[in-house]
Length: 333
Figure 1: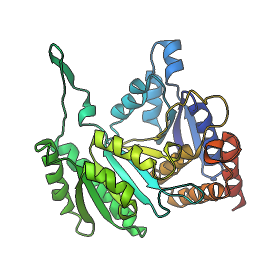
Figure 2 (figure 1 turned 90 degrees about the horizontal axis):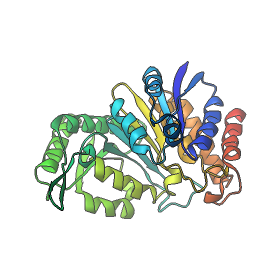
Figure 3 (figure 1 turned 90 degrees about the vertical axis):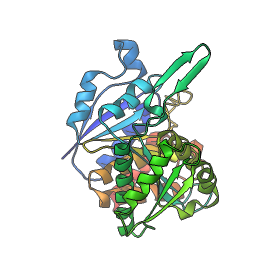
C-alpha cells in the first residue's frame, strides 16, 4: 500500500486533485489517501497557511500530491519544499497527440535546482533607494543537482532516449557563481562517460527551446533560470495546463501541477485536469510503478487525441468528466 498525503489547496486545486485521485484509484494499486489542509482559506480560518499537522502528515507519507496555492503560496508550497528538502524541481516538456504543440517530437525534462540562487530570499536595503538580492551558489548543491540530472539522463537512455544533459548558465557574466556552476557540471559529467554533456548560455537556451526543442533530453539549470525557462518551455507543448512537476529530495517527493489556483474559473468545473493527472504519473514513477505510470499516460493521450477535453483544449467536458474518460480506458484494459 502507498500512503499519499493529499493537499488540495485553493481554487481549482479542489477540483483537479479529486479528479486525479479517481484516476489513481482506477490503476488497481492500493492507495491510502491522507488529507491535509493548507492555503488561503486555512489562513483566514486559523491564521496559519500551512498547519504543523499537515507537515507531519507529509513527512509520514510515501509522497505528497498538492493542488494549488493562492496568495499564500510562499507560505505553503515554497515552505513545504524547504521543509522536505526537495532540492530538484523536475518539469517534463512533452508533446502529446491531440494538443497543438510547436513540434510533435518534443520530449525532454528541465531539472531546476530548488534551494539556492536568487530565490534564497536574501534581500536588503543597503542605502536609501538602493536594494540588493544575494545569489547563493554552493558546490555541494551544484554536485547534488548535477548528479540527479545525470542519473535521470541515464535512466531515460535505458528507455531509448538520447542520453544527454544540457547545462544552462550565464558564466560569461556571472563569472564566480555560474563559473562554479559550469565547472562542477563538467566535473560531474566525467563520472558519467556514457552520457553526453553540453552547455549553453541561458539567453541562447531560451531561443533553442523554441528553435530545436527536439534535440534536448535533460536540461539542468539554477533556480531562477529554471523557473523562467520551464514556463517558456510549457508554452511550446500546450501551456501551463499541460505542465506537471515534481519536487524530489533524498527522503521526500512533493508533486504539484504548475498552474496556479485560477480563481477566475474556480468552482465552475471546467479546469483542465491534465497537468494534475500527469503529475500523478510522475508520482507513480517516483514510487517505482513505471508500468502503471505508462498505462495512465497512454490512457490520457488517447483522451486528448479524441478531443474529450475541457473547454480550454477545445472540448466540452467538465473536469470530472475528462478524468472519467481516462478512468474508463484504464478499466477497459
